[in-house]
Image (cartoon, rainbow, N blue to C red; front, side, top):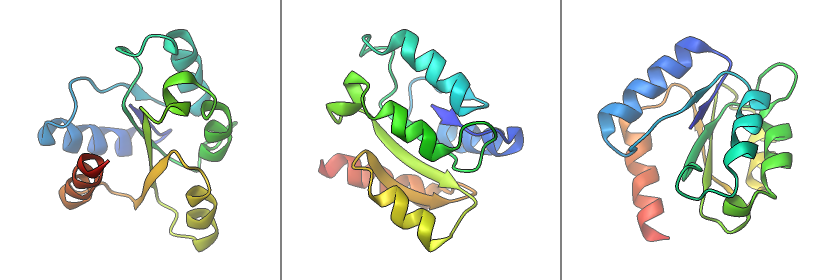
Amino acid sequence: MLIDDNQIDNFITNHIVEKSGIAERISLMNSAIEALKHLESIKEDYDKFPDLIFLDISMPVMDGFGFLDKIVNFPKVSKHACDIVMLTSSNDAKDIERASKYGIVKEYFVKPLKKDMLDLLVNHRGDA
């Protein structure tokens, strides 16, 4: 799942993820609230719930950290069967440190997503 209010960033990320072949399905969400509503409706269905979520920080109404505060209690997330990757334009050390405090955040990447970032992610997920 990709969560970002910037349609161009979603398009680019979607293209890179599709091309890499690491995902069977990719859902695009334009806001954290839209994503939470969708995930709430499928939170008990482990087959439909994503294994991996790319999350932007800077979004209107609810930012990425607000999303993290809500999703941390979802069953698949709390059982560490869903990883979150921060994919943001922020390289602010405070944001990086804040994201690292969430055990579900596995990586912090600065946009745009690149193939070598996915390779790193796949290697880390394979080690788990």
